[in-house]
Amino acid sequence: MSSAHTVFPVPEEVGRLYDRLTALDTGTVGGSLHLGYWDAEDDGVPLVEAADRLTDMMTDRLHVDESHRVLDVGCGVGQPAMRIARRTGAHVTGISVSRAQVARATALAGAAGLGDRVEFRYADAMRLPFEDNSFDAAIAIESIFHMPDREQVFREIRRVLRPGGRLVLTDFFERAPIPAGLRSAMDRCLRDFIMTLARPEDYVPMLSRAGLCFTELLDITEQCVRRTFEQMSRSRRGQGELQTVFDEAAGEKFGPADMIDFDEFGSVLLAAQKPA
View 1 (tube, helix red, strand yellow):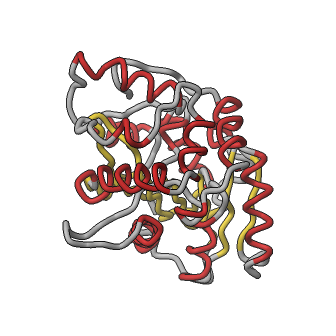
View 2: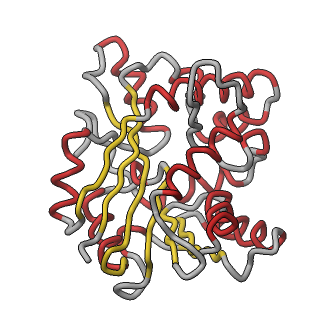
């Protein structure tokens, strides 16, 4: 399920990490800290636009409209949820183990006039506080790697999805064995950001055991990873905001500049569906 080094995230620790992040200003990346997507080498859009593009790619795979309910697993401060609601008209419920994120996301949605279509709740994805068959779709943008058991999260998502409901997520994975010279740095990254790496070959059997049908696995590493870390690193040096974010989050000052040279560090877009 994970790389050779396993840190077994604890939800309360993840919540405290994002409480600290939420207290800081992340305006240079639109209020969200997730990967961007660039179509080509000469695609010059900034990270905030590239991040919206990745959100839109994932949203389009949900096939939802104003008649549907969407669950956002690991909602951050709500920017993707609000974007989904604006683009599709769907009602979106976001969950987070960070009470600070829930409070800020709720305030931002209210200020944006979306309080009737977007709501946020403190909840653990390992034990979702929703009835069976409550949602038409679920999305998880770079959140499942913070959870102790991916398969348990898949089981919970299957339970709350209606028959035929879709799940779309992004996750980090280890593209190749980490060289011995980089192993300690990678371990430090996993520890500081309370995460594990999956193996691509594990996704399909995990989904199957959880009762979900795999529909797509797309390696988005080349379009997303290096350029995201490069842009975050430039913002960190030039504007100070992300330096504060990552220095506060990682006690040993491990940030995006340290991750640029991790060619073994990849990202995947995964889609699945609950049987109809």
